[in-house]
Length: 450
Image 1 (cartoon, rainbow, N blue to C red):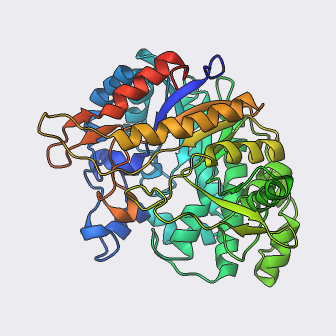
Image 2: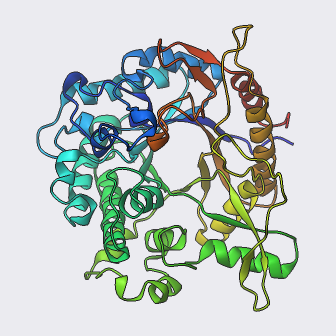
């Protein structure tokens, strides 16, 4: 069976991971530039100063998307390419780069889906307190207004923030991502509150400045717990574990999506976090809860659970030898059924899968090609689960494969290859992998060949 008519088949990438051009044409530094150039923070002390050199090879990359048959491209904007200091004077060459990219995408039949923040927070604003500074929300909104003014005559699909759970927990709690902080829980929750305010103010800026009808959402991680069996008890336990705060950290869905979509923090989270909860000023929740048109979900894996004696979710051990990706993430196709289903049931919004894919052990074979059967099999399995969700009434609008090309995988440097297109980081050469050709055929068939 095919996917729904007008299903959006896309590919995704982010500015910092592919662009390079670190100091080209007036771009300012982000916290990731600082983090990468701090010895010992990134695998083999690698950095993204050049990355895939997308900044200089953008026309070539758009042609690769066209050859893939991609209907849409999820890109992100580098805040410091637009505002080198995060605020103040606009850097026109940065705006011009994205304007040319949008024009080229549209000329090649590829719809741009723009993410406004994908982790590369301006270093100069970080020195003013970063996400711990409540003014961050307004700084972000001012930046969003500038981008919207310049691109919304052609861009209609927008996302405010990518994976707030990750850049807050791993960057401000665990210290393994930029800016490398290990803050107490109360400070992590304060930074989270300011991030949610930034989302709300960002949506307000988008709506106020959009020149064409705007479809607006955001793209958090979807932390999936799925039932080990189809018993009602296991399904109920999995639903609760997916839709609730169950432990005192940021790795959950509800603490982020409930304020954004329901207008309040979840009661269970308030109890678990207790005195660490942030102060909520009058009007904050009204600012955070802005009307959204869709919910983006980044889903790579899930955790099977079953109902314990009192109905609570208990992790079900995976069998010995359970398949793992090169990043040692478990292969869990069921996550692309249950994650969208639980989130759609709870929040009643159309869903886009804004990221899904895997790191694989890829290299150029003796025949000059890149053979990645694991990526094909992985994506095949996950897409079948997603189609089952569609068949069961989940309003899934599209799927974006992560990633268009191999790129800088944050603290893992260039160790992990997620791309449909192989990148030789020494020469910049691009080689479409077998999976790229396979995905092209899936797009052509609208999934009817799965």
